[in-house]
Amino acid sequence: MITLTYQYKLQQTQQQEAEINHILDVCRSVYNYALRERKDWLNSRKSPINSCSIITEYIIPADAPYPNYNYQAKSLTIAKKTNPRLKSVNAQVLQQTLKTLDRAFTEMKSLGKGFPRFKKRMRSFVFPAMLKNCLDNNRVKLPQLGWVKIKQSRQYPDGFQAKQARVVKKATGYYLMITFTSSESAPDNPVGERSLGIDAGIESFVATSTGKLIKSPKFLLSSLREFKLLQRRLKKKTKGSNNWLKLQNKIARLHEKIANTRRDWHFKLAHQLCDFSDNIFVEDINLKTWSRGIVRKQSLDSGIGQFINEIFPYVCWKRGKYYAKVDKNYTSQECPLCGHIQKNKLSDRKHNCSNCNYQINRDVAAAKVIRKRGLIAVGHMVKEKACGDGSSGGTTQLV
Image (cartoon, rainbow, N blue to C red; front, side, top):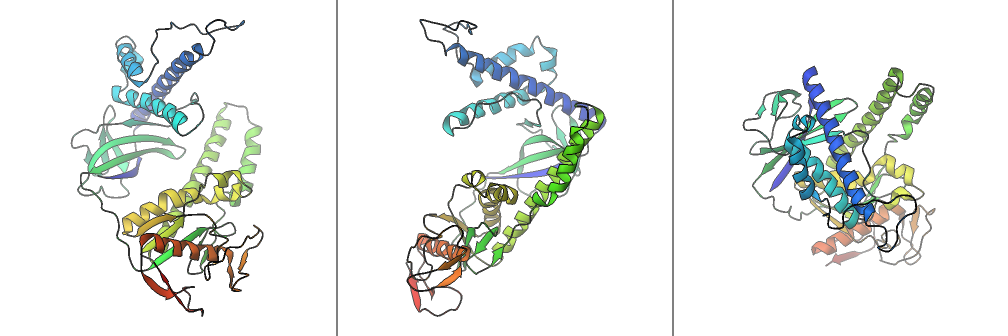
């Protein structure tokens, strides 16, 4: 099954905008109430059997079941009969809100994420089922909202069926994210002839095995001066006033503009790299650790994790390119020519092999090693120059 998600900007009326804000507010109330119910049940089980707190203690019957999704969904159905505020919102939308909370608790246990927090505001909600014949030129029919105009910046995909829709509130307006599905299966892309190794660098955004160093535009750092000015002005305003809200929205718009610019640059770079290769190999590294190291500010500003794990694999799949990750160990210490491993300091930005005296940029050397490991992993029989750049040094056969 193939799944695609297209995003369109909504051109809603004032009545539809008020209805969207009402749905978001009710979803926030349901989410916080369900979270409070789960926290109370967990807190009531913290006290030992033979003693309790001197100050306060949660008292919930011992036979009370844990409020999981099924329990809370059933309670929500009962509450809708007597609560007109809950009844004013589509039942499936509120159920999806409970599923979001349940997924947060599942990820907390399985992935080690933090405990779910209460929400001051909800930014999105989901219609899990679309209506029949809901797509039309420049408009979409949604449950409870009816026909809503959209800015159709791209055509709907042919042969796909609209599965669900998510309404997202951003600083620049409201957006509709439609998920299209197809029953056809997408086979894995075949291995081609031209191969490219890519290394995520420090001084440069990525380095390729062909010797190309691509530096990342400083998306956030270039706008820090404007951010500081707006934050100083915001500090002098009364919290909650109209001027305070206007400045908050201006800062949010600037953040959204930077995020959109970064994402657009990532897509253009991914297509550019796919133009010159059939097989693309990257190292399998945990990019979350980069955000906690000495290069955390640069890595978060460049968005290397979003590029390597999300955008680049999608573009490779769409372009029919083979994409794979290889072992990350010693890629920056191994010589791409002779395979000798030597320790290098982080400050050493040039690879100088003590065994064969091969000298090259450190990031480019790591990209060449990644390319070689990728070819070995796919089982290619390739007879080429070891350096791949026409330099001397004999030939080698990768098996």
